[in-house]
Length: 213
View 1 (tube, helix red, strand yellow):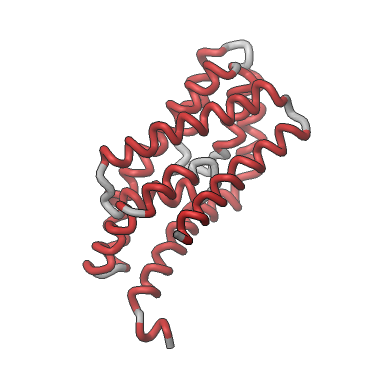
View 2: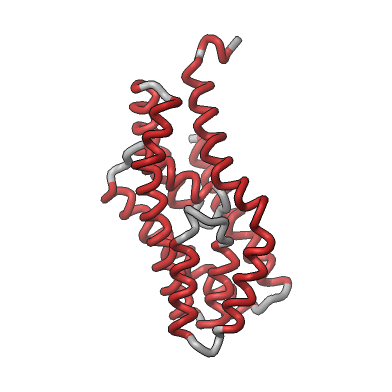
């Protein structure tokens, strides 16, 4: 009954499901072997920091297209390269990935959204992106799936590129240093696992708090 009175709600739900499916399905199908391959690759190049940095940047830049585990890549970068070089490589990769994700959302993503949403819905999406979307972009950077989905939606909603960069740049810097720091100082034991769980959890809690305001 609610859906019948509010068809725009149903269309928005369909759009969100489609975006999440694009991210989750490849991860569910290929995530485990990709994780193992990445860990092996970065371990084998540990004595070649320049090559490791290039690989880290390339992997994170491809995140919008491939099921790349950004948290694993970030932590391994810190473990292999140390905090400074690791954080730099992770930040560059995250920035490149966000740029590609924004473009995908703004071009093919917006075209696809236009097949689902009406012009009124698209205008409402843009208003949301300029409001709570800004906070959500920042606090969900360490949150798997949500981070990629919100970047795509920011592009589809035509968030100002300058505003997008102003939000993403420091948020990615914090995420990069957090991951690299975990890898460099925590090793591969329980403290590392706790840190990996805490970062997304904190981001998700902040996002939920903002939504309730």
